[in-house]
Amino acid sequence: MTDKTIYSSHRWLMLLCTSVAIGSIYVDMIVYAPILGDIAKSLNVEMGAAANLMMGFVLSVACVLIWGGVVCDKYGITVALVMGLLCASVPAVLMPVLGKSYAAVFWGRLIQGASVGFIFGAIGPVSALWFPPEEQGLAGGIMFGSISVGSTIGVVLSPALYASLGSWQTVVAIMSAPGWIGIVLALIYTRQEPSAEVIKSLQAGMAAAGSQGEMTFGKALTLPVTWIGALLVVANAWGMYCLYNLVPPYLAAPSPMGVGLSAVTAGKLSLALTSVGIFAPFLGGMFFDKVAKGNPRPGVIIGFVLSGLFAYLLLADAVTGSMALLVGCLMLAGWGIPFMNPSLSAYIAMNYPPAIVGRMVGWWFGFGTFGGALGLYLGGKTIDAQGTFFWALAMISIAAVCGLVLIFLIGKGKGAAREVEAVEAT
Image 1: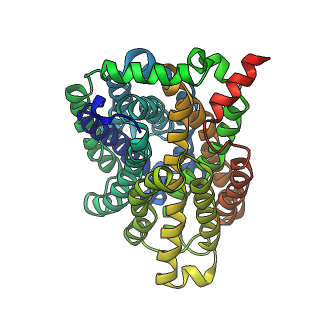
Image 2: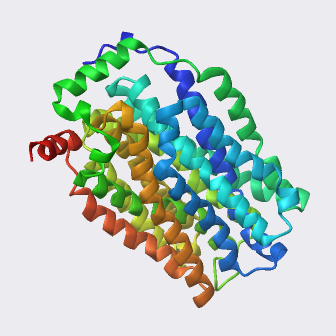
Image 3: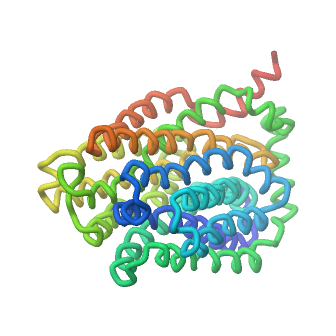
């Protein structure tokens, strides 16, 4: 059992600041989704092209996540959080100016997507450097839960503010406020260094595990577990980004393209999809710590089964015709991906050295997030080609099946440690 006394109580402030940063950038991401149809009309583009505004955000996430962890590893958590929040908040607050041109909005979304790349790189270091191993699942759960907190705020307030103000550009600008608050918190509370005792303890643990303490980022990229994990996150990200960005417009799109609800009603119903993600990561983290005992497989299996099965059921007329069934399917589909995320992040934090853990979180989730961008791109294409959301949502289930196959190729425990020993032995 780890000596918790060497871990400063300041870790909870670090966790708060990181969680606020994560939540705020997902407010900026999802604010478009419930009113996407109105944005398409305002910019004089088809729904598929409007969906590319979501895809552009996610594509940028993927590109920057791959290398964004370097910023955190080299320059620290404060720099990573502030850079990310500026990327998200500046284009949002300028949207009343940018929002008259589709091209300008699209470029703004690319800049906003970079925010996730910088901020997600801090998840691994915050977990590994500030929290004892038996709390890392909980810490990851809270940070990943912030994704759903931000998404929930966005899907609820966005259509309500739009109905009141009548300008989506103004709505986007107003909802950048949490990001500016996050910048202030990061500058005040995240500049403290972790205790020297924690660093020594981690170094001793790596030395005891063998030569893993010498593992470099380049060497980590030679490990099969690194590539299998990245492919696993492709399926994970496909599910998360398509659920959060395509389900709200699916509910609001006129029949037969979608369910045919009003934007406000679709936003309220989307609350069932996103709000459960506030609690799912918290329970997923506890599940990883207390039940799975560091084994990522059970949590990931549960997550893919729920997201894949119930995303597909959202297409059934029997479900969309019953408010109770629709809400139930939305909640269960929304539970799956957030529930598994703490298992993935804690697994990374436990299996790579602190010096590269930020980059490894960035690599797994950056490479993997190309799956989210691909899912949104193909979803937009199928929506335009077929006039329906069927394949856009059905492909979430296909990605979930792929994820279920991949998780059985990941080790149950400290897989990276075993694999680096094998690599060095050869």
